[in-house]
Image (cartoon, rainbow, N blue to C red; front, top):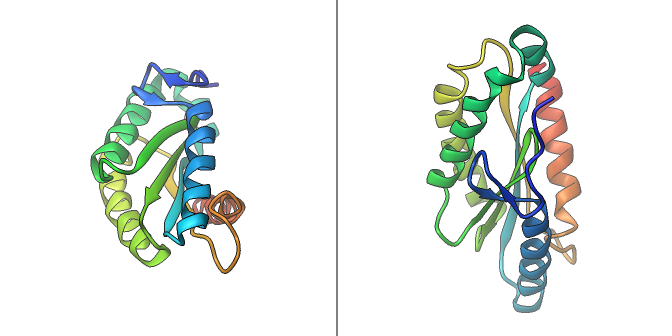
Length: 158
């Protein structure tokens, strides 16, 4: 399997890791709740990764993961947070962005990822899941909805 990123920093992509994500997400969730601000959680992964690994080995995935990290970083604002959560998952916190505006971000990222990352993979597809707080829910609580959307998109892709 692909090497997991470090908890605070991923050397392969140059992105912060899971521990950074947890801290920033908790702080941003509190800020959004307290001041009634918008925010969206975006999760990104490559579906069908097991098939790619079975056919080509893990070395084949180094470049697509680096390309995906670059696309996410370049496609987000400086005020957004882009992190590598796991060997095949990225997390993006879109600050001051409601779910409607997030869809526009996702579609721009998807087009670039399909063109650049998809060209490197014989199998597999970059999938997205996103969610914003609804009603009294928090940004932290939105993660489960983003995960469900990501899983649904991955199931449809594979």
